[in-house]
Length: 167
Image (cartoon, rainbow, N blue to C red):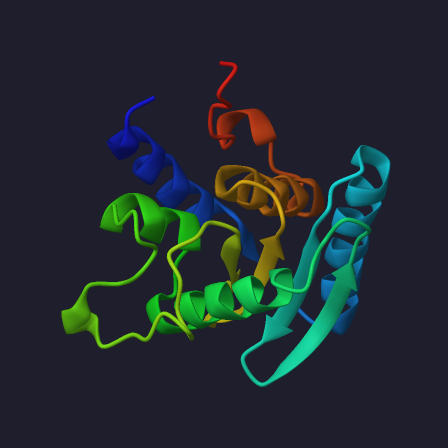
């Protein structure tokens, strides 16, 4: 699938995966679902769910490492700044160095082009937070979040899933 097709599909994910409401209980439910999947599939990830003013859920799975929380923090900063998925930003920017263009004024120590950060959007309120996963290849980090959101919101994954390398 072409990059332009992936970008269009991620835009659709962002438009469709909108919550009627989002609070600590919803964050815990989604975070727990991602954690359960990580246990079942032996995924070496961390998951960090937060509103802009505070963290709501965090889990580190066996095999994750000390750099994963920092990658997640930088992904969170990107979602907060641009109000869109970090994997979409990766595909739009096409920067192999993972850094934003110098003119953006975004320091690599605080912002990174890497998939796995997804906006928490609430109908009528807009983007209020982020779900970040780190530890897998970026397309897979993104997919873990999208799968969990589809499950939680009752949305058919098949129409929103990015193609895998095997497809």
